[in-house]
Amino acid sequence: MRPLLFISALILSFFLNNITTAQPSINFYFTTAFPVNEFSRYMDKTGFGGSTEIFFSSPTHKKPYGFGIDFSYQAYGIHFVNNEFEDELYMSLNRAQNFASMHLLFQAAPSAGRVKPYFEALFGGSYVFSRTEVFDYYYNPQVLYFDDWAWSYGVGGGLKFLASGNPVDNRGAVYIALKFRYMLSSPTEYVDRNSIRFANNTFYYNTIESRTDMILLQFGVQLFF
Image (cartoon, rainbow, N blue to C red):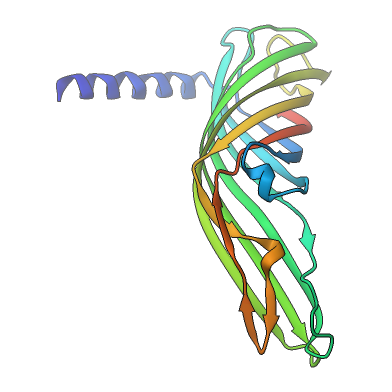
């Protein structure tokens, strides 16, 4: 019990020390997501989305590491459901797969200057959901909603380019950032978007269970306070 309390006290002391000397910042990114590993066997489309990173303590020249929270969303586009019965279906579409994620984010930026390389690690989870909507001849909507969740974690790195401000103390600095991430996940269940059918006011579909690993390419801006 005492070793656990000692370790907890050290972790708490670390966070309190960083918060009291923190230099916060916020990042906004546009994201392109590419399925990899077994996920690429079931998803042949590229995803698009965005993310917001809030750093409670940003990496600086004096303290080249920081931590924060990452909120992100990726969607793999709209897919039109096959219309087998023209007299039954007027229009149908399937928004799948969608990933709303939150991760703890740790970042290290070991150098100061107008161009900064950085490395990071993430751990958190993703809410995975799909929404299929079908309108019949009378415009009555029928909706199939399917959701699950998964643990997710990964590593990444990139470059920051100073756009304005002082690269040493970063007060009020603005950076343009490029980033690469490799994200892994636990298995999750989601709808096979190609299997969805609607007939006699009933949805028919299959599901897939797999890991949803992906590679993310991101472009954005970092604003220091």
